[in-house]
Length: 538
Image (cartoon, rainbow, N blue to C red; front, side, top):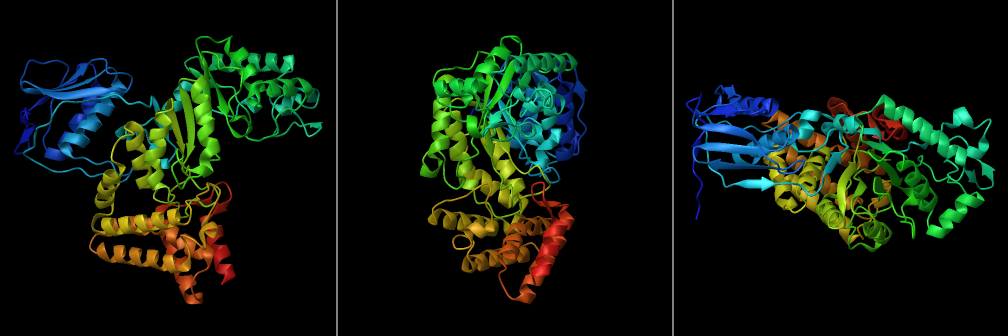
C-alpha cells in the first residue's frame, strides 16, 4: 500500500513551502536555487519556523556521508549529521524525487514544473565506501563532485599532507646523496640517488624521515593523512639488511612496512599511509600494518576488459586484494580507468566497472580512488565518470539502467545509437578474449575489436548519430565529441585511402580543438603534434 502524501512545492510559480535551514545554510541555499530553476518561484529560507508546510533540514546522525529524507505530516524532512552530508542529501533528493540529472560539469538536466508536487517514500542511505574520488577533470570541480557525492581533489588536499610517492620529499637525494649515498637504495650492485628508493634499514634515514615529517606536519597541522611511501620506480634497496627483512616477509613490502610502522608509532593521532604498489603489492607474510597505518593498494597490473573477480588474466591482482583483506580491515584501493599512452582511444571497460567495484567492497575496500584522465577529455569521460560516481555511492545499482538513462539524456535522440556502438565494441572485445591494457592502444586491437570491418560499422553508427541530432546543435556537439576516439583509432590504424585519411584527421582536429582537448598521451603527445605527425604520413 502506498502511504505517500503529496506535498505541493510550488503553484503557479509561487512557493508553497519555506525552507528551514536549522544550521545548514549552504545546503538550504542550494535547495532554494534549484527549486527556483525548476518552478520559477522564490523560496524563503528561515533558520527556524512553525509555519506549515516546510522543507526542514534536520541534524541527525546517519554516518559521515549518509542521510535520510521523508514526508512527515505536512513537511518534508531531510536529515544528515554534517553540512557536507546535507549537501549530498539535497542533490540526491533533487535527482531521485524531482528528476534532475547532473550529466557533466557543463550540462545538466533541470525539469521545469511551475506547479511542482512531490510524493515519495522514505529514503535513507549511508555508503559502504567512506572515501570516493574520481580523477577526471569534471570531478576536480567541487560543486560537480558534490552533486555526485564524490570527494573533490581540493577537499582531499585539506585532509592529506602527502598523497603518495613521498620518499623523495622526506629524504631528498639532491640534499643527501653526494655525502651519504648509503641513505639510498643499493640496486643492481650500486647506490642509486636520482629516481631511487631509500635504504630503509639505515637508522639515519629513519631519523631524517621522522624529522622532516614532523616539520611538514607542523606546517599543516590539520591534515590527518600522511603518506610515507615509495617513489614511482622499482629500484628498491637490495642491501643485506633490507634483503633480510624482505626475505622474511616474502615481499619487498617487508622493509617498507617495518619502516612505516616505526614512523607511525610517533604519530598516534595521525594516519600514516603507504603504497602497496609495483614491487610492494604482495602482502607481507609476517609483518602487519600498525593500527594507524593505512594501506593504499594499486591494482595496476589488472586486465581491464573482464571482471577482476573471475578473469584469469587478473589472478595476481585478485589474490593481492584477498591477501591484504586478511590483514587489513580497511583497504584503500587505487584503481585505474585510463589508457596512459592513448588517452582518446576506444577503451571498452564500461561493463567491468560494476562487477569490479562490487568485488572491491566485498573484500574490505572502504576507500576508492579511480585514476582516470587528469587531462581534458578522454574517451566517454562524461559517461564513465557518471557511472563510476553512481557505483561508488551504491555498488548495487543496475548500471545498465543508469547508462541508458545517461545516454538518452546526454545524447538525446542519438542515445540508442550510441548504446549500439557501446554494445558492439564491448561484445567484440570480449569475443576476442577481453584483453584491455592501461598501457595499450588501437594497434593492440587491430586484428580484433578495431579491425577494419568493425571500424567501418562504428563509423557508420556515429554517422547515424550525427544525422539524428541535426536539429539540436548542443546534442550533436556532444555526439561529435563521443566520436573522437573512433577518429583517433582510424588515424592510428591508417584505415582508408588518402582522401578518407585527410577527412578523418580534419574532423578529429576540428572537434578536438573545439572541446579544448590538449593531450592524446599523458605527459608527451599533444593534439597538435599528433595531427602534424598524422598528416606527415599521408
